[in-house]
Length: 305
Ligand SMILES: [Zn+2]
Image (cartoon, rainbow, N blue to C red; front, side):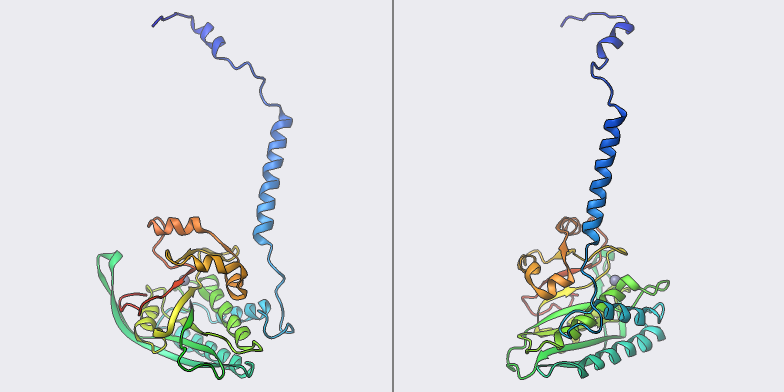
């Protein structure tokens, strides 16, 4: 190797770029292009259909009606599991709304309603096996089925949300919006001018924030749990933004493929973010079920949720 000595002044000259620095015009053009791209992304992200009102055909999803249901629920205030607001006021609001929906269902579909109270315990494996024990947690459960359907075909789609909240929030996004969307989805399904081919079970569970107690109570104790073949969980993942299909069962890509063409799935989750699901699958996201969907192939495991 030959080492050639240079003075520091010569080195500075040799390393100097021969290109002229970017002009201000180029920088402005790049900035404008970036802003235009951000505006386009924001527009696409907020491009939603105009919500329908109460005068829309009954079999359509009425966004303004769903919004009013959300106002009714959140006006109760925070709804901590076990509180008067959660166990009495919120349950009463849900029951009266579902009874009203049942009264206005089409003659081809009917709704069964059940207020379920469950007690049990399960291990929290991610918290060193700490036991989660609960007693008398309530859920409001409704089943929509076609009138005169085949009695032996009991398979059902489970649609889940939760109406309880953390102590310091009325829970508009977590998960009041999910409950409002499912109430309106139930109304639109029950109003269809033909019998449903498969049952839909709507689970408004009243104890999620204290780690999935009401979900556990339903899947281990409710008489309809055995009929569930697939499920969709409507949950919050931050406040604001459009709905996303956050996570799908790892062995059930069919729900991703069907979603854009399906009238209900496309409404519930217009776009998906599989990258987020990948992150969560690898344990890098908080341990919460957020907007999950999948299939149930076996009898629910007693420790599952
Ligand atoms: Zn939640």
